[in-house]
Structure formats: C-alpha cells, structure tokens
Image (cartoon, rainbow, N blue to C red; front, top):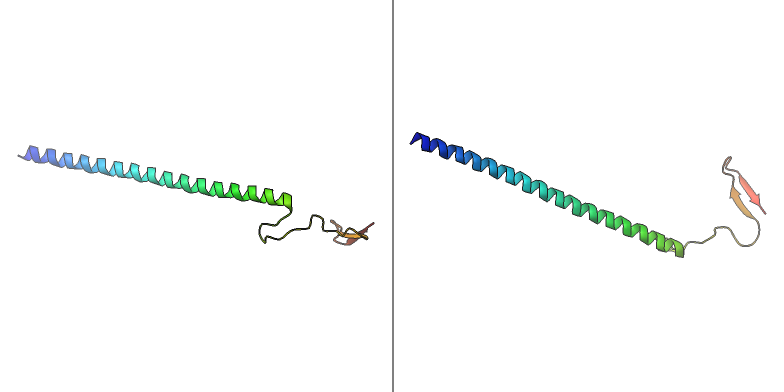
Length: 94
C-alpha cells in the first residue's frame, strides 16, 4: 500500500511539474505574441506618419497645424536679410 501511495505522490509531482512547464511555455508564447503585435502596430503607425509627412511636405503643408507653409520665407521683392551663421549678426543680401 505504501508503494502505491509513493507512486501516486511521484505521479502527482510529475503532473504538477508538467502543468507548471506548460503554463510557463504558454505564458511566454502569449507574451511574445503580444509583444510582436504591439511592435508591428507601432512600426506601422510610425511608417504611416513618415509617409504622410513626406507626402504633405511636397505640397508644403504642415501636418502638426494643418497650415500651408511658405515655400520661400524671403520676400520676392527688395533685399533679403539673413542671419550670419557664425556671429548671429544680420547680413544684407542684394
């Protein structure tokens, strides 16, 4: 009778160990799948934003504010004033 009880206890330990291993495997697989889904969604969203910015940049529209940007900030008439990149002093270009 004790031998039979010892076999049952060992069998219970094996079942418990098998259950724990299967649970660990399933949870890690589920975590991997969720990570891949979230990663793919973020990558797709970033790709869409970059593509949209490239498309609207060619039109001259700012995505953040939806306003048209001037293609050239300098006026088409008269001299243009730019800042010197070294000293920060204004330069007058004719």
